[in-house]
Length: 195
Picture 1: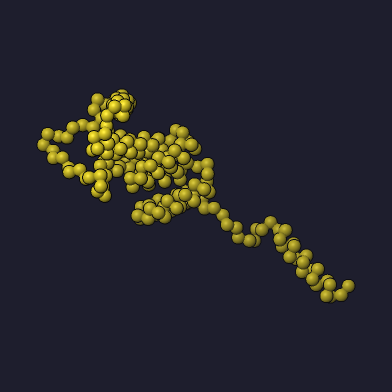
Picture 2 (picture 1 turned 90 degrees about the horizontal axis):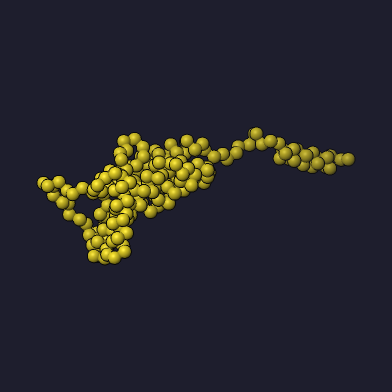
């Protein structure tokens, strides 16, 4: 054998040997721990970078499909910004992973009530609340009063208090009450606006 035939064979053997190794010397793309991603998303949300926080949480939900935490946080962010329909969708994803999660259940309940309140207010403005819809709304109110242990869901305004002007449906605002955070520090009763 000549050097010309031995050298290429030796080179191929080295190349194949390097490929067959355990790869300990080569960098791998690893997924960041969930806690770190959640912390980054929290910092982004606090800095007002909502889209970045949601992108981080969506990535975490894909990387950790069995964990409810990213879904609950996405639901909370969307709830806090008044996007109740998407908040419900994300909270339901969390509830698929943990049906007992109180924050997710609260988001579904309160966001659903706020959407229903908006729809009923719009119907009331159009004078279209009647018949079976009216009876169903009254039955729902009765059920809510029983569940919450309250005789009156929305108390009348104080005698000396002025009513705030309502924005029209065509305006940029909504008739919904100000958004309060459900979870986290300083969170109050999520049903407080219903009393």
